[in-house]
Amino acid sequence: MKKTVINCLLSAVLLYVIAWLLPGFSITNFFVAIVASLVLGLVNSFIKPIIQFLSLPLTIITLGLFSLVINALMLSLTSALVPGFYIASFLTAMIASIILSLLNILFIDAAA
Image (tube, rainbow, N blue to C red; front, top):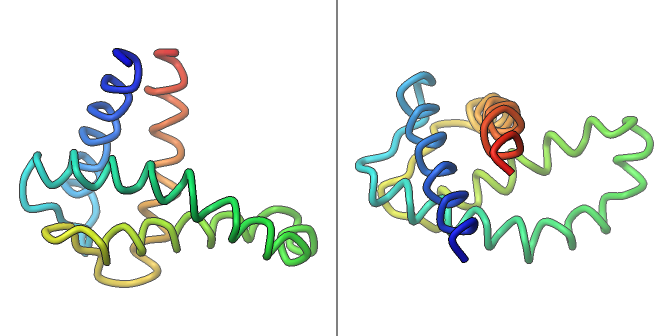
């Protein structure tokens, strides 16, 4: 339980950092970042596996690069569900998902 709370808070901080770095990606306050990290976790747990399964042939054809598009779609879905969390375009979502993946590897996976 403690590890889950820490991961959620770290994800919220990472989302807040991305909002500071990337134009077109905005979060109104830290509470919205926490809610967005929770919703992103739920979307990644329940919806992403279904989308990955359905797009498996396309992912194989593109040698796994389509998974970047899936990550951007999950981030865009999260921004559509959480008020106060705004992503301007799909390109912004794609760049943000790449940055978020790299920061997750650096900080969250390293803390585990």
